[in-house]
Image (cartoon, rainbow over all chains, first blue to last red):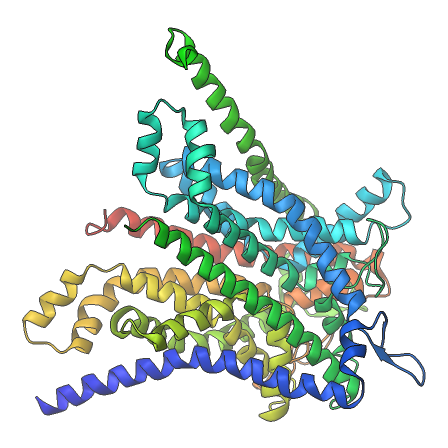
Amino acid sequence: MKLRNLGDRAARLVFLANALLAAVVLLGILGYLLVYGLRTFTGTSVAGFLFGGRWNPDAYGEPVYGLVPLLAGSFFTTLIALAVGIPVGVAGAVFIAERLKGRFRVVVKTVVELFAGFPSVVLGFFGLVVVAPFISRLFNVPSGLGLLNAGFILALMSLPTIISVSDDALRVVPQSYREAAYALGATPWTTAIRVVLPAAKSGILAAVMLGFGRAIGETMAVLMVAGNAAIIPKAIFDPVQTITATIAIELGEVPFHTTHFYALFALGLVLFLIALATNLVAESLIRREKKSFTL
Amino acid sequence: MNRATGPGAIPRRRFGSSIGFAVLAVPLFAFIAFVLLLVGYLVANGIGVLSWEFLSKPPTAGMTEGGILPCIIGTVLVTFVSLAFSVPVGVFSGIYLAEYAPNNLLTRAIRSSVRSLAGVPSIVYGLFGVALFVNAMNLGMSVLASGLTLGLVNLPWIIATCEEAISAIPSSFREGALALGSTKWEAIRRNVLPYAFPGILTGVLLAVARTAGETAPILFTGVTYYTRQLPNSLLSRFMALPYHLFTLATQHDKIAEVRPVAFGTALVLVLFVLLFDALAFVIRMRVARTNTWQV
């Protein structure tokens, strides 16, 4: 009897230790990014990194590590992605949540969710061989690789997140809200748009945040279609280079423990902090929505 | 107001309602059609290259001929290593969160860590893998370093699906065993885990599909452009399907000549991913049909 209880306690401890690992990994990632990332500033100034307008680590004699053009690349591609992804994603989610039932709903949701796991290199390849020539011909520009192409591919990649989190947000709106609207004579459309959607607004905002996180953290597809020039874009066809792509391009070429190496970790730190903040805000928005329905 | 109650008004409003939903459905179905067309496009362009030789031979003649066997082996190998790490840790964590975790600050911190980890950009995992596995643990660029990095990437997915699968088992299953004098762990092992198994398996299969397509985490932790040798130990470097596609599409000096091989590689990768997705889907459907305790 004693031994059994001991075993039971040991089992609990083993499970707890494993569950704690998730937190340890998160802190470990943050730790390494901080330790390596902050060493950048022995070789360059903090202000020079955060506000510097040029990223040119290969410049002879005077390499510069300015975040601004890379941040602009990440920000503008994500902006285009969301400009397409939010309307399409939220509209799709309203349709799925309020209109689809049974088997058809399962099929539609499965396709959307499985696309979230679609290899990003394959999407990048598609952007390269199909979207780029298309853009180049349609708008008569020399290269289809740039801001517009990257934004389009990122829109596709953020859609599954936006749709499926928005759908969840709409589904947790209690049935009584809909019934009350119907009882007042509202049509299903009016109910969906004027009652259910506003009730789910924090959850929808969370979906947008998570879609943003997905888009800003994406690496391979963007690397393949963004054109990769570390400049602040002036037009929608300009090539851009995102933070993620910069790490992917340069980490393979730098010797360990140089300022350049550390600067790439500093970029990783910036990405990590953006992703973490995005997630925490989204999480609290989802909690807030659920709370608003409990009396 | 009067208009709404008059005869004939209701059908017109219903009609308006349907129009509204139809407008919402257009972008959604355009997206789904796009996904299907994308797969169709890859099949149409890649099927010509697919042959037994393509799957069973290494690349030859500067990658313009031959097959992609080393890439298939590499991808299978790192995916397997990643699961060898993340499945036990993930299942144990899932058990803890579903069965033991009290509602306190620590549990909230663990849950929040898991969700945050899921939102960390994959290139950041790559940086962490370089710092920890390649460098600090001295594994070098290897199958093991890449596999462990990928294991961290898919850990939060596995934890989430395990917790969900275990939580879905009704509490009466546990109570029956507990009432007969079993310890908590015995009740979980005999009366919960066997029934949660299909759900856990679904999660693992989906993780396989997504892990196989991940590129950024392996970029600097072990994958290589070309190696004659198949990996013969966990410390070997390796080739992988997604990276092969990336190099063929963007880095190769005879881009036009390797294009067919690139399409073939993309198709094999997508079929690999879809195979595991389909397996997961079939199991999920089957469980939904045979589960008598779920409503």
